[in-house]
Image 1 (cartoon, rainbow, N blue to C red):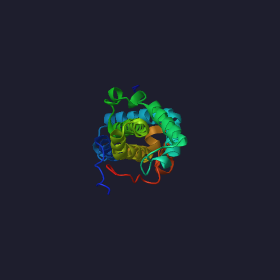
Image 2 (image 1 turned 45 degrees about the horizontal axis):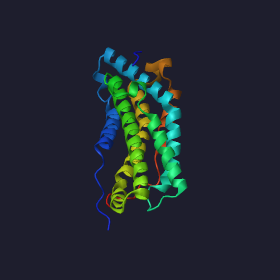
Image 3 (image 1 turned 90 degrees about the vertical axis):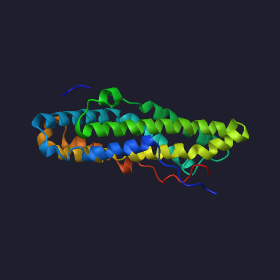
Image 4 (image 1 turned 180 degrees about the vertical axis):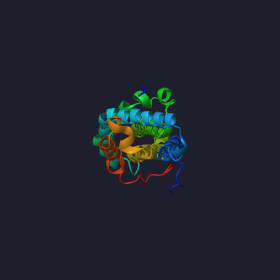
Amino acid sequence: MRQRGGRSPTVARPAATLLAAGAITLALAGCAGSHKATPASLALQRADLVDVSRQLIDVEPVVHTEVAATKRAWPHIDNGLPPHSGPTARALIRIATQRAAAVGDHGIFQESKSASLTGPGAGIASAFRGFSSLASRGWTMIDAAVQQIAHARPAAARFASANVGLYIESVYDSHFALAQIGKAVLDSYKKLGGPEAFGTALTQGEVERLAGVYSEPSDRLYPHETVKLGS
């Protein structure tokens, strides 16, 4: 193996969110033409999927911590920020911000290292990077909005309150993207030959575990955010 993300109408989703969703699509479809690929190309795609899967296993603890912190804070923001967030909400938002920043882009998920990935591994790495970027940016801006609403002049506080929906949506979308990664790994594993092709390099059990860790029951946020930009 080689060593190596009145109310006004709803705002359009951020470009990074669309890229993350596109990466998931590419990951699921990346092997659609693999029956035409050369043996060398298939071997490379399998090696890259193994590398990406190993990285997903390595970052599982920090992702689990981020998801847990986000789920604790989510009920305090899913319908927007109140004029005065209480101490519990502020503390949970601050912790979620710190946990999201700690995820980062590890190893092969760094853009410079993932550029050489082939096949579905490339899309999965891009989807994880989209999650990490959106979650960190979203929580950072939500935390800043809390401070603005609490301490800034009235006009600045109103602006922060009116626009925080964009960042709340980013947090929701980042975890929606994260929740699709496990299925992408499982589907890609099957399309690239399954346990017979991967052997001990990546087992069926390891892939099924990833499909459970990076899944909607584990990572998606409920309820869907309801705040709108400008509300």
